[in-house]
Amino acid sequence: MSDTYNIYDIFGSARSHMRPESENHVTEVPVYEGVVPVIFVPGVMGSNLINTETEQTWLVDGGWSLKGWLVRGARARKTILNPEQTTVYPGGGIPDGISRIWYTSGGGIIDNETMLRERGWGEVAKMYYGEFLVWLERNLNDHSILQRWRVRDRIKQQLQQAGQSSVGDVGALAEKCGEALQRFHFPVHACGYNWLRSNKESAERDLGKRVDEIMMGYQNAGHRCDRVILVTHSMGGLVSRYYSEVHGASSKIAGIVHGVMPTAGAAVFYRRMKCGTEGGGATATVLGATAREMTAVLSGAPGPLQLVPSPEYGSGWLKIFREGQQQVSLPTGSDPYSEIYLVRDQWWSMLETELADPDISRITDSAEKNYSMQEEWNSYAKIILQKVGKFHAQMIGQYHDSTYMFYSASEEFASYGNVTWTGSPFINSPMNMLGRTGWYGTERVAKDLDSSGRPRFTLYTISDYDEPGDATVPERSGRVGVDQAQRSMMIPTEHGAAYQEEEALWFTLGSILEVASGINS
Image (cartoon, rainbow, N blue to C red; front, top):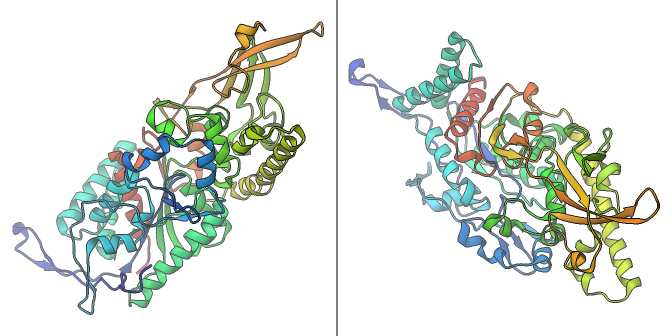
């Protein structure tokens, strides 16, 4: 953050405004009790990154900023998106919508773009989060009486529609939320993190450092700033929960609002390792349309690998059928690591070892190729054992006491709850085998022996979406944690666009203000 500007020294202690004419123009001067920073933590791929060696970026300002990824193959992706050579890039675009000059107590002026960039807005995907950050900043920091009434009435309406409280409770809670709007300043910050690295590291290094920096900044500027409120999207929820509960920083946090968190993981990540990003089109091409492109990056990236289904997801989500008969249903118990992720050299194994490093395909010496593949497997297995399994175990049941969350359980945005391979006999002829060797799409040709010991070939095809969700996280995972939440809501939404839904915006705003209303004077 900048040493040139004191971005924290911008709030006075009081504001005045006029009541409506019917109340005889009585001037009310609220005295603010302090500052409650709201820190947004984005999802996987939602932070801008830069490779410190090549200076190439993962920049999510808009479709134009991602067009270079339409033509980048597996080798380029593995080089650029290297967890050990990337860091957060703060130079992303700043969204329009806030026209304001910021004045410090000493008479200094901070222009709008400088202020928002110093708050971290340039670190996160403008394409997905820009309008949301603007909306949140404007609605949380309009301290007029009219805004107080508007917020109170809209929150009351949402609570009534959700049927989560009695009529009397709804009115009282909505009134408290409106009052909280005038008790505190709510500056909106953002915290990007290196989503290629373990969520543990992102929690401790990126989020932990940012929370301390923000709180200290406002405190040094003479403001009361005891705790922050975190708002998360997708994997950002895992980062925030680890920081709060496992890392032991819950006392610095007044509450956490989670949006479409993959609490128990998502089976779609197995599918992406095997076949590339689902759905087709430009989005899939940018993210990685093929198994080659996805595996080259994901096999060495702890953060995304921590999104595979954990034991909390349940058993039997990977299924294999042949000629209508179920052959496999894994995991059989609570160990997806040994039963799925660490199974090697099966046609259905999650990691196609030869795809982990695109340079392996260029090696002609068989001994050298086998050595390289073994090295890649060892590296991947180490991540699964030391960073994925351990992280999953640490996260079970870990929620901040003031947790709020929304998820999607929409048929319109169906998701992979299970991944099913369906097989049928495949005639092994030269014409049928043409083009199948070394192909890693939505089909696989598997060889085994029939009951007579003769070789047989089966063509397996991967399934489509099969459960309600948000087109990424199925309901079975998104709902995990609802019982621990102070308030939760099902909001039909697509995963990436979650904070573009009006109901999600108001749920988030209401949750922030409900948390703030419980902060003692």
